[in-house]
Length: 217
View 1 (cartoon, rainbow, N blue to C red):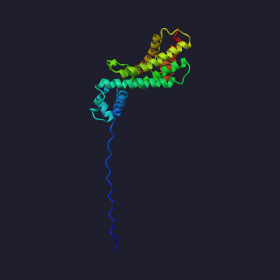
View 2 (tube, rainbow, N blue to C red):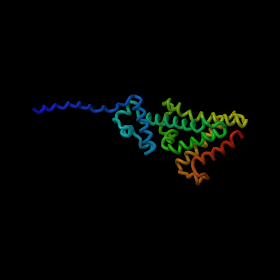
View 3 (cartoon, rainbow, N blue to C red):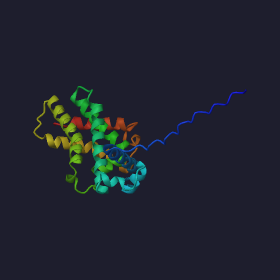
View 4 (cartoon, one colour):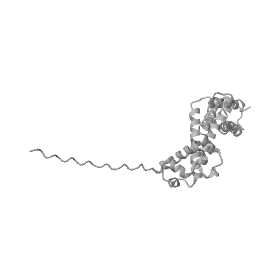
């Protein structure tokens, strides 16, 4: 007699994978990253909490769990900009021993960051965040790049044996120079070749060399 066909074992139905849930910190970081993308791609005026939610792929109410309003989100995006600026300056300047070339490297890093991230750079220093003192994280982050320039200026003045009694004014001169160059490139669209250099990095190095020649004299 033919054997009775055995019944095939029933396959276990796979449960659909649960959608990835954002953890508390992950959601905030994702919203800030989405906001930064919008600022760079479309401009800061195009940013809205609903638009950030769409960009991050979350519900329209999700941003309100972490940000009271649009300005609070802008403050956090600006804070990340200052942190990234300080990190880029540290990366370029940390391996340089001499005070003079290190000051130049910090200035070049400043200009390159600004011109590679024009949207965030405008937000970081612009008027859209009214009361910056209301955002302690922003204030703390914004002091990092200034302190790096200040320390580099102080070291340079010491290296050339000049009095550092006007250190704050010398620091402001150094900061104003690189910030002004970055702003002119971003807002006026100056071409580096028209300003005497083949690229922005070379132009930055050239301009900061003029600064170093004048400091302490």
